[in-house]
Length: 256
Ligand SMILES: C[S@@+](CC[C@H](N)C(=O)[O-])C[C@H]1O[C@@H](n2cnc3c(N)ncnc32)[C@H](O)[C@@H]1O
Image 1 (cartoon, helix red, strand yellow):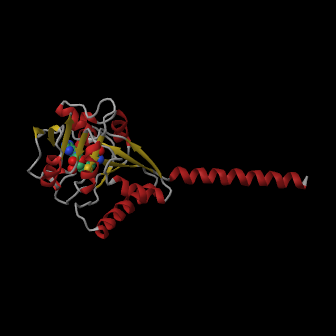
Image 2 (cartoon, protein in one colour):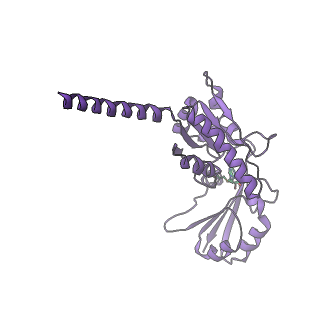
């Protein structure tokens, strides 16, 4: 009888602590990295659209206090149709090279997101193109994962596939190799000969050097640049960009 009672309380204790654990884990929110595509709201995936209609907190980092977030402007039509209440966090992610200062900004963004997650709200972190391609989302993701919060990624249309679509070209066929670079330096010169297509992102930062490196390759080539892809002021032209616009991508296709 005594043993029976002991076992009964043991089972009860186990059940209660299981319930408590479930309750505590249910209260923690999830970080959702959402790729919002290159610019046109219609390029949002259905999954991104549905999540943005539902999630209570949206984090839309901006590069300057006075500048509106491009990612936020892409999802604005979806948010405008919502009738419930939601919150927008707009941490500052300036375009600077100082690593310590940048770490400070990412820490701050992670801290304000953590507060919401701990309070039980999911947070959607919106980012241009896809969250897994040269996105600041990854810096925040690392900090949130380290605290053992759940993280989900909803992929988006990348800027360079958007640019290829706008330019009406294919990026690769058969066994062709695509090289994608965010910066022009000696590494590009070394691998260039293996590539059939080169996608250069952030071209505004290094357009002159890019012209020299590509010019030294003797193969026939087609050079196309796209600025503000799928936006109202989209521009597509042959050759390199010279006006230092941030949302510029250059695609070089080599032809034998
Ligand atoms: C920080 S990276 C972001 C990349 C993004 N996560 C993606 O998946 O495409 C920014 C660079 O992406 C390219 N980019 C992003 N949006 C673009 C657009 N709408 N038109 C042309 N290039 C774009 C530009 O090269 C820009 O400098």
